[in-house]
Amino acid sequence: MLYLGELSGGQQVYLENQEALTLLTLTSSGPGQQQSQRSSWQTGAWTVPPTIFQTATGTIIRLETNQGQLFLLLQAGGVISPAANPPDLSGARVLPLNPVTSGPATVMPPMQPLPPMQPLPPMQPLKPMAPLPPMEMRMGNMQLQMGTASQAQTPGAFCTQCGKPTESTDRFCAKCGHPLK
Image (cartoon, rainbow, N blue to C red):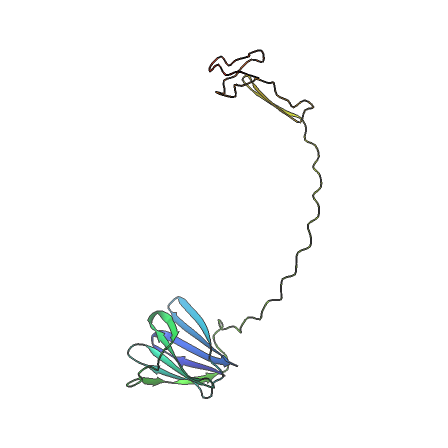
């Protein structure tokens, strides 16, 4: 069964017990805005309808379940938490809690579990790429060739020690004297 309680400041609380699960939806609305917050707890089945109390520190919901008594605290800012110990309810005002047939549009039934994910099919082998046409690039006295039958570069084009360009006939680098192969 679903219950609705009107709180101060335009807030409403919806309480519902689904088997062992207690669902609490807190809604608030103001000019141009509407907010909704939903929480749930494993409380057990209710033995009596819940009771809402208004205290100086906030709102307290008392649930009587087949697992015992439980208190939920609604504090400023919409913070909802179970109470570790039974709160002091002396001087608390009992708020009316009315049974309703439907909740706000934002209340959704619990989501059903998704089916297990199926394994992906094995990847198909990659098709070989078509050969690329030969390419050549020249910049100053530098040259790069790719895809030609002769890809060997001119030996001794640069000194392996300092990087200075050399001639193919040089035996030593003209800058650092490193022997060239």
